[in-house]
Length: 264
Ligand SMILES: Cc1nn(C[C@](C)(O)C(=O)N2CCN(c3cccc4cnccc34)CC2)cc1-c1ccccc1
Figure (cartoon, rainbow, N blue to C red):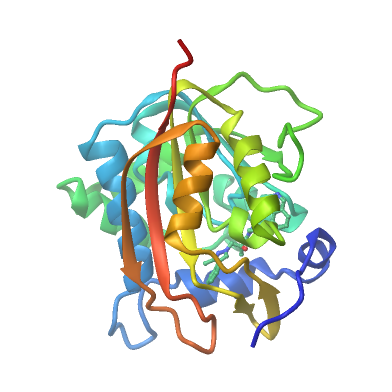
């Protein structure tokens, strides 16, 4: 079920955040059975990165946030300011809905409770949500195909840049992927961190009835692109894909933490 590259215009016209959130971020099935194993893997690795290993700093920029906020649940206590970004208006609007506690916003309470349990007190989930809402200070447009992904804004380099499932969906080939990684890497200050979540071995994914292109990547391609962009990989971990084969042909979800080399 491979498809042609679904460029920027397709996302703007056809990407339905609410279908996507329901399909990929519902915490458990209607009958409360199987937990969303993909999401709990991401939450565990963000917990290890920010809460256990202590990656922290002044500003964190998340590139290609999509309509989600799960990626901030552990980092919100480690940075003074978080900047969320996305290419499409509808994804930025969905994030703003949650930030404003709009009743139509997606319900992240199960993910909030899960992260609070990892941190030792599941009952603190309301405070955790408010901490995320107060730490995300800006929601900006980004385009990873631009040398400055936040153009026309010029933003000071950040202590940490995170990006989940963005570059593999936004880039049509490995050359574009390497270039985009350099663009995103330029937003990290020397000695700062880059955190990536990548779908390996995925050529498509579905959102509702719409099929989206995904760049087929292997671990070695990602690792070499990160190194070439000026980063040392500190650690990485893959997990077997648990998405339904109807939704995607993804083989592995891959979590990577790297540190920007300091030029001497
Ligand atoms: C799960 C999952 N979530 N997602 C992220 C998703 C829905 O694709 C998204 O919201 N994105 C990334 C692309 N993005 C962009 C598209 C065009 C141009 C962009 C220029 N700059 C920045 C971003 C641009 C806009 C935000 C992908 C998966 C997934 C992947 C493989 C297999 C299975 C699931």
